[in-house]
Amino acid sequence: MQRGEVWWVQFDERRLVVLLSGDDASGIRVMQVVAPAGVDVSGLGIEVMVGAGEGVPFEGVLRLAFRRPGFTPCTWLTTVSREDLIERVAVLSSAKLSEIDDALRLAEQAQEQTPATTATLSEMRDALRLGELG
Image 1: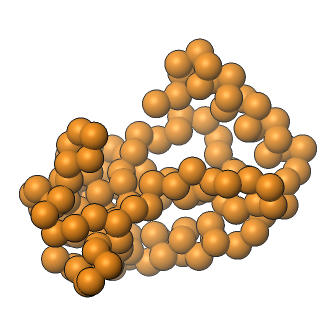
Image 2 (image 1 turned 90 degrees about the vertical axis):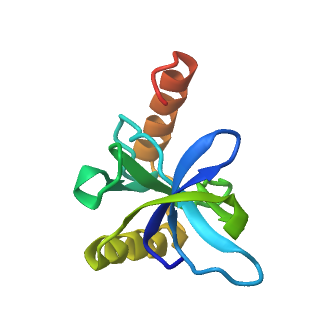
């Protein structure tokens, strides 16, 4: 098992993850592949696309929310054990891993809240209420 591999894991249901670290005493750091937001998340976060081009069985994203004062971002980063991994699906290219690394660095930087990000958050909340976001 190595960084950049894509695996099926069993959480509440079978889900796809990308390994971001190897197996060590504290577990394996992974990020869940989720459906694209379907709305513009610029200013709020970043999505790194993964899909058929990388050997992944569906089009998805690794989504990272930007840190902002007074805001706790939802994250799809977690730690799993070797036993949680069910089946290896693909291995991401070094270029895709670089894109993920850039996104992780960017997400760690504090972001300023602007009227545009506040409006986007309101838009996303409304879409969630109406069941339009997955």
